[in-house]
Length: 278
Image (cartoon, rainbow, N blue to C red; front, side, top):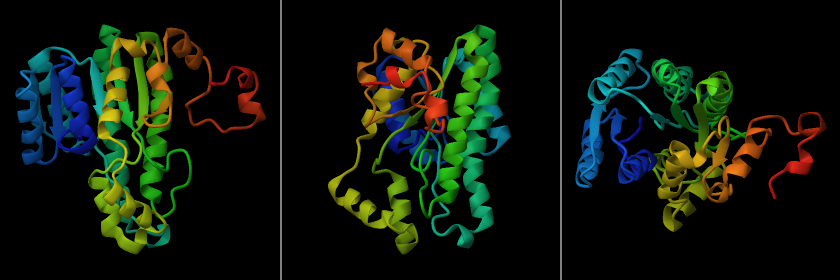
């Protein structure tokens, strides 16, 4: 999994290891990577740490090949690496910083998915989990690059999910909620450029946000047999009732447009309103 050095990524890595998974850790900062690796090894779980910049295709190639050399297969891919800047009015954003955001948040997961999917297709099994975030389902003022990159990642999730469905591969996205991670500090550092989100970030800093462990539990659910054939969905860790979804509900959701980016109107929702989640 990528972005495994801290925050939500570290929480997911620990949760997967606790369930008995052999976890491959990828992050750009060696010291943070070493911390997660040490925690997992203290649990007597198997892991491999590979310093990786997901924006570089050669790094992703090395990460995947190292995983295959060590474990022989890849069952689950978690794309968690992400950044928020540039923060501020779109017309004032530095273009190179804008492009860098897309490179990390969208192109990085794209590289990882393209590299692991052939092995999953060959084995006719796999789970891919992408991390979405604020701005994917509604405009996020002053965070245009982040919102666009995460929206695109969700639509990529939905599209690839349909393409690989015949191969028993499920692709889903998680909205983790407002978690106090490095991204919170990015908002605070941006100051007034963060607009209306600055006060909310300050309150969250003092009062606490959503637990990263909640997103980790959702990731375990999507990585396990418990989620069955559920695919092509954007699921909110704190707001959706995923903890109570049984096989019948998963089947029903798979046949509906719920938890996707579809436009909400009479045309797209006809035939489904009577079967909406209660």
